[in-house]
Length: 121
Image 1: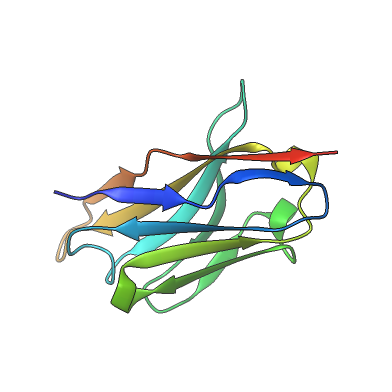
Image 2: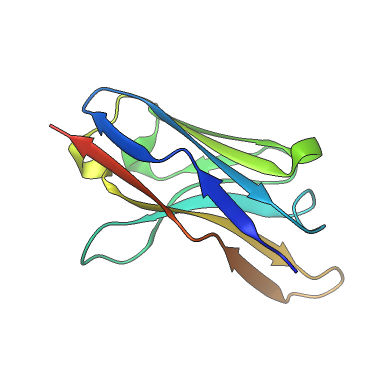
């Protein structure tokens, strides 16, 4: 049974910082891509950042230079450090693990329950 549990969301003023954490149970974490997505009210869920098992990162343009994704494979945890937050960063943030079955091109997505981030102006 795979579970992703996020924490660290909250209310912060513009310019402030938050650090999100996501603990992944089960044995799928260390070998697969992990990431963070966000969904604002009335909008689709969008990619924020991803990190491969080897530490290669990718960010959406709007967060480059402000957010940092990292992972600790020993702790089955992925983090999102968010600095210089803006009101437009307000959204529910979801942790994701994209699991590729070894020897196939089959992928499964696992999601956390989401954590609310609200940035006031």
